[in-house]
Image (cartoon, rainbow, N blue to C red):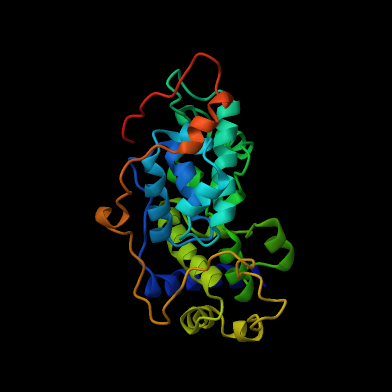
Length: 293
């Protein structure tokens, strides 16, 4: 595809997305660490489900307690996501990385705010070194918390872009879409990212949805020849067997960030697994109550 045609396709993509979705911008009052954890919830999941999962994690006293909570319990807390098992694994892995680097105070308050003070390139490289930080998560934190320009691309989004011929097979494997950040200006990056993510999350949850296919055909009519067959080997966006899918109505309304009441976390509780894992903390120090984030 010629460069001019590619740019025109990105422009068309943006117009079609605006017809079907509403922008959902990152919350400005979240810390770098909170943006990181939210991105781990958001990957391959709708915004409302990610907000619900993030809110449920607030029942723990602090992020260190989340770190030492069992995989099974975290997966249950994140059951509404597109890939709850994968999300739980990534959350534990990333928090373990923060812990191992000693990025916490004497009260076990984890902190990544130092990344804001660094050159953006250096901050991103440091972020990418943390376990479980995928290209999607790094890009989300870059534009949501660090003031950089990056468009997050998870599996559902990349699969959808491949169907409309906006990413080659080779670049799809690299999880990279050449020219995307150049075509979409920085001041429109957060808005565009949220619109594109909503399409990707819808496709990941239900690749055979008539609504999703209709949107993809608006972007590129030739996509009809590349749609995956039901039950066939090309059906790559569907979560693996045993993983929960996010249902989608064929005529679902435009996505909006849920009101605070909708994501109100359950009553505060202590995670029993945190006590069982007390040995993981340095001797002589205990968890202190974390101030509300």
